[in-house]
Amino acid sequence: MDSQQPPAETTSLPRIFLLSLESEAFFDEMYKDLIDSLLSKAKVQRATKLDPALRYLSEYTPDAIFATDAALLKTKYATVLEKVISEINVPPESRLYAADEESTIESHVFYPEPIHDLTQAAIVFAAKLGISET
Image (tube, rainbow, N blue to C red; front, side, top):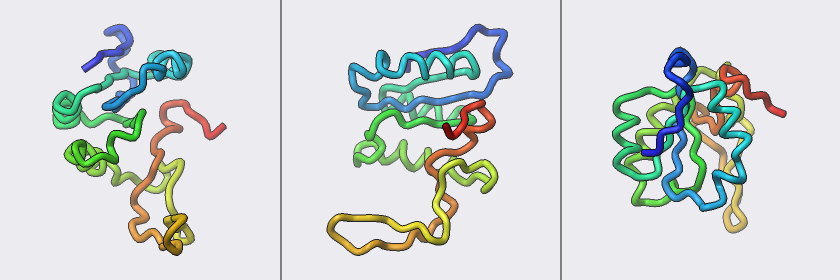
């Protein structure tokens, strides 16, 4: 597990977990400013492998989880996805990007299908971390 943490005196900061299970080589350079900003406002931990990711999620409850690549959609990472989903049950006021009664799952092949589980949210608690919608 790659550790990207601010100095020890900032331990009261929010805890952010970056899931980079199949990270591209360009990620760190491309998102350097974002990562630096997160590091200045939070205690950041990053997992690049399956077992360390599961271990971290078993030991800690991060304030935010960022999936930095599409790895969670792959079957071999299903256990990590399940662990992340267990963290999703957050109150509506903490959801920045979430489904509502009119939301649908879109497809180029099938008809749009209503979303039944409105408790899921793609982005949560962002305001607590000082991240705005802009």
